[in-house]
Image 1 (tube, rainbow, N blue to C red):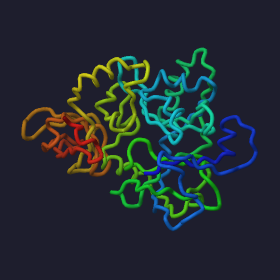
Image 2: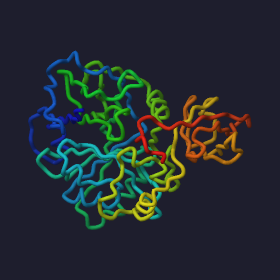
Image 3: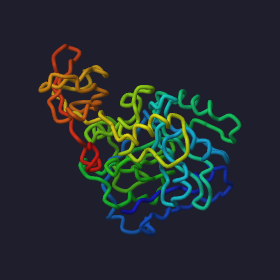
Image 4: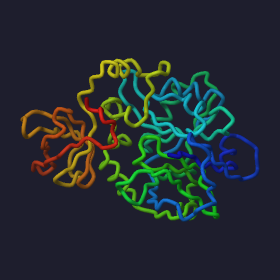
Length: 356
């Protein structure tokens, strides 16, 4: 499978503090060889559903200490952006000192292919942008970095039009009218398609061939259907544990990097191999919007507590469920006190031995 990134070098150069005036198109080589010329075979472009993500925000982090600075406060290994030429996005969590998740983030490299990742764009939940900024600045002491919100940029999710399909190796194709700033496969799972960053006023339909703008709610329902958390509603700050939140399955953690904040509990849990609860997708008998987050999930068959609801939208939701009750019929109370049934399932995209 080819995995590539599209960076508009002129704009990216300005982000990186470069003075190069020309706007050129650069395709970063993938691990399986050079990608096809984007001007060729426009008919092969994957039909895409494009979702603007107004609930996610971007921070620009730049400076010669960027890599070392972030290395000590995120769960993943920043060196991957430096050592693997084809990698231009990294999923990770920021943890508190007790090892619980504070924020889920995606880091996008905007460096030149031959240089170090001296600056990145960091995606986070927009509702906690100020908190993330403060958290970053707490650990900025004596580091040669700057942290700047980028409200002039927009983040998009691109999903195949067939909701049940994953990336099939094809790439979104740019039009002749313009180029996205960043276009990269979502680092969490193939089922999440691609991530794209543009100027805040740009329209993906003018930048990509065969791209249809859709409502963000459809994107959220897709996430819940496949069981993928995102943002503080799904990952309550200071409450969620990274391994229970399936961080390993989403390529969001390194167990071989050096120390980082919150590492001790996470590493100990991983090496014991015991994770009794996980975030699982839920099929609900009533609309999840009317359910109270944090509501208790009880096993009807066993008559025991089985977990708790994290969030819901329509008939889909996410729940932190004990794996022993993953196949049970679960009940929880709604705001009208009428019991709602829920059925948890193990996502197909997880490793086969994930629940052993």
